[in-house]
Image (cartoon, rainbow, N blue to C red; front, side, top):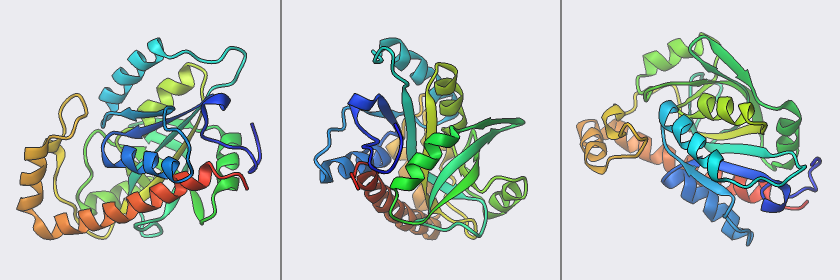
Length: 237
């Protein structure tokens, strides 16, 4: 599997795409539909490290992998910026992912294959996985000084488990919020199972309406880019 002429998201090549549930998952599926590709290999995962690990353990027990083939995993979704170099709508590929004092690396060959398929500018970055929503601009800037450029809530756990069972893993994310402004504190809007809770979400947004509007605007822009990126990845050039 190599080169920009390959179709990277297709069941016959053993590629599984993992996307956080909800709007991100829908954006990826919409991108596939735009080029008439099936979304059967796109797996909706929960939000949060522990929930992702538990989900993937159960998923792996039930999946039938092609024999004598190298399985590939592509983790897609949105992320937050920790540095002013990256803003809403920017596309990033993860070189590595940090969690606490641990660092794991994505498959470099797969990263290069993905990069060769993308039509727009893409940066290779170090990412940080957080157990909670990083909503404060001050915290974002502080975390950025530790070496990571973007943050998410699932990356490290997905990379850790999928690598451990033999997958070559790539991670592609789109920035949906910058590091110069606060976001609403939505930590209470997620269940322990990684599901979004509508009422706490609404209350969190209402408490900080300006930050909420900024979050909505950035998310919508990021989701549109995510949809377009998915379309590019299945395009045969």
